[in-house]
Length: 482
Image 1 (cartoon, one colour):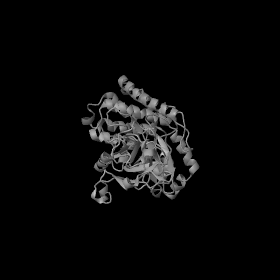
Image 2 (tube, one colour; image 1 turned 90 degrees about the vertical axis):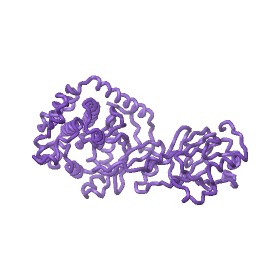
Image 3 (cartoon, helix red, strand yellow; image 1 turned 135 degrees about the horizontal axis):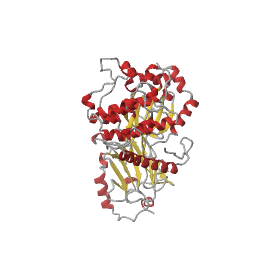
Image 4 (cartoon, helix red, strand yellow; image 1 turned 30 degrees about the vertical axis):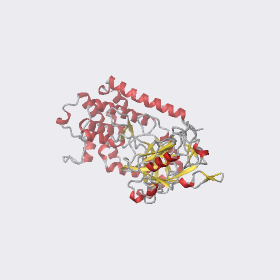
């Protein structure tokens, strides 16, 4: 049964309904601005009888405000009463049965329905579950109290084009706005339709690849093996790869979303970072790269754009992304992309001329360049430095050292930077040595970073424990967080 009954009155019902929705205007939607959705009432019958009392059945309800509510309470946007719905149904409708919300301030955000009832809200026959939410899709059927009590069909009037992605993606993810455009592809915001969680989707178009690279990416067994390796990575400072979809035209990678933006933007906003903040962020980066190396993965494209922040606060979680991209686009394409913007590349990468003849030490060099930029806000190597070509600057380790920028930086920070930007690979500092360097031994920073990562590890373990085996598309794993 539903909630305690609310007193019904034919007169007050009619008055309240008219104050909520002016049905006389429903046939002229052009006169109503900013309609983002519409609920069409259904003509479906139950056991030969209609759900609605037809003389009071609305043709449709326009959704204009960011929140629409339905139930028996007078506070609801649409009030379900004995004069518009069959009594056999109304007795099981809750005071506040469900709400539909849409963030109108965010471009292309989805409509989300939340079940607040005792007897159920259903979308396409599936019970949402009290307190749970899900994304509403265009033409979704909404039922109340029972899956056969179909009262509305939702029309999304802000519908984004969802048909340009593989058929495997559309049923599972709502495609929202563009987050950015990287060298290797477009990144879009997507929502899991059942969990209502946000993710990033990287799209790598095959039209940009050569025939050889397309042949590489079209080897399903090889690619899936690499995908499974990367999906199995578990570290608080590594972006999780949720799923990968391969189509004729593109590869779609569903990634964990970080909403704090790129490290590049944070540095640009403040011109540079303080030493304590750099230490807090840099420690996480080094731990992440060390983990990748322990799994046999060299990133090779570390730069501030590939370091993502969880939030806007200063001391936030950071995560490394875009590792293993060469597995998707091919070695040649990956090298061309990197060498097109070599500001963070190690000397041995430039000397290799496209041949993968170098080791994981290249990531230490890139970390050194990022470290340099964090502290002083300018690049150590640049096309703008006319005394020497960019390539020769890197090959010779000739970085621009401005006394005006470095005068307030500690000696230990300068020494650490120099050891990372060492041209001779055998003399370059290692990741373990970085972590043990005097500049990194601030006890307070170590404790704060470990506290943050421990919290993330415990969340990861809880999620892994609660995970269940699905239809074969998802992995059920016990996360082992280093």
